[in-house]
Amino acid sequence: MSPSHASDVPVYNPRNYLNSPATGLKSWLLTQDHKRIGVMFLVAASVFFAVGGLFAMLIRIELLTPGPTIMDAMTYNRLFTLHGVVMIFLFMIPAIPSGFGNFLVPLMLGAKDVAFPKLNLLSFYLYMLGAVVALYGMIHGGADTGWTFYTPYSTTTVTKVVPILLGAFILGFSSILTGLNFIVTTHTMRAPGIGWNRVPLFVWSIYATSIIQILATPVLGMTLLLVAVENAFGWGIFDPARGGDPVLFQHFFWFYSHPAVYIMVLPAMAVISEVVCAFSRKNIFGYKAVAYSSLGIAFVGFFTWGHHLFVSGQSAFDAGVFGILSMFVGIFTAIKVFNWTATLYQGSIAFKTPFAYFVGFLFFLVFGGMTGVAVATVSLDVHWHDTYFVVAHFHFIMVGATVMAFLAALHYWFPKITGRMYPEGWGLVGAVMVILGFNFTFIPQFLLGNEGMPRRYFSYPERFWALNVASTAGASVLAMGLVIVLVYLLVALKWGPIAGPNPWHSRGYEWDTASPPLPENFEETPVYTRGPHEYDEESYANPPPVAPEPKHAS
Image (tube, rainbow, N blue to C red):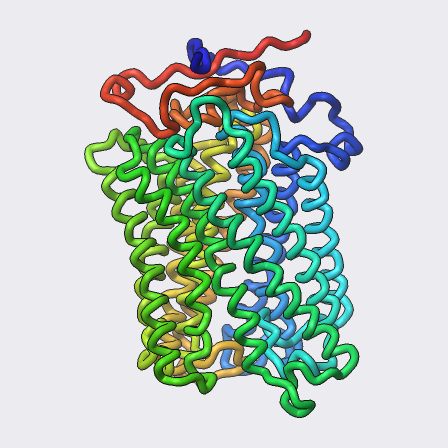
């Protein structure tokens, strides 16, 4: 049978994962419930997002004037390193997969939990341990190498690079365990009726991301460990003065770190595939194309790392091959973009806050993707290499797309996670400020890079001053928008209206249970006779009924 339904009555579910089996701190810290672990990941990642954002604002304030503004050169070098480490390793990589993925994947598969609940909890504590070790290094001197830890400088610097490297090494284990859990869960715990052609698109992208996490993360872990050992003991692995090879480090590092780009953006695409169906009330256009393109991006991503080494001395043939392979990522991404856009055609679009972030995501992905094709072209990249053009490209395609999807997910699944609704008016205000602020921050940086301003420079010629002021002003608007989002979501946690089980009238499987979900997710294992994105003509005028309020003890 399929999940039963009743009328949509906004009644709060009194027995849910937030208060059962217990509400104390110990019950959360020792929980094996995937939903609680997902929430803890979301809270921790959001805190680090705020820390990384604070570092970014300090960087932009420093660059407000051509010379020293609020700090010296060494402090500036440490600050942009810490900004990169926190935003990439502590926010963008874990936020959607470990946060929303943990919460939603079992719900979307009709399962009661992930395959390995204890490993799931261990992955959270490894994440926190890695964060603590990295933060220790930040507090006790920090690092001034940049988040890429390029050798030989990272093997000889006097700053506290070793704890930060070890922190990133530990974080890798968390990433591997999370990916392993999702792959096994997807293969073995799907509810009856969920064949591979009915697996939600969110799960497809998380599955593809998990493959990258398992295959690529060990390479980074070993590389960072080698750098830490060389820094501590003076071994000659990557330092040419000791017989090492710094270009070998670049190959090792980017073999992980370019696929890591897709660890960030594939989960973002996962969110968008769900949001576009829910708010256009349309079946996804080209389900198989969207699903398999996720696997295509994961596969091709392993063969594109060399476009980071165009100026490292590799042969013209190698550079050409890596450039061509990099273009294939654009093909798979374009498949998704065209299918999302086609899904909107003749849809019954509801322009709510998650949809506003979808629009922002689409702009950043397409615009940033086109600049990605440009920097994958050898003749252009030679001129743009290590300029602010690369900084702007990375932030558009990675930070912009990931943050848009993270905020879309936060608003779309806020009722599912909390059982309450956020204020829609304030949601749209925050979305407009975030999207405009992001554009005003990084479009000037494209222009700066095109004019030749190098990245990571503490001071700059006066001719770059106006564009740096514009970028800092945009960052201020972006920061204010994010503060607005934080405030109204915190208020909604306590005083938001009761959402009911399915306020969006979505057809996603995760909405076929109460909001917030039961501790065991479902009272009985659901059996599905429809796909997760199936809307019909009747559903335009009559939104699908939602799950009944669950039975509960008084």
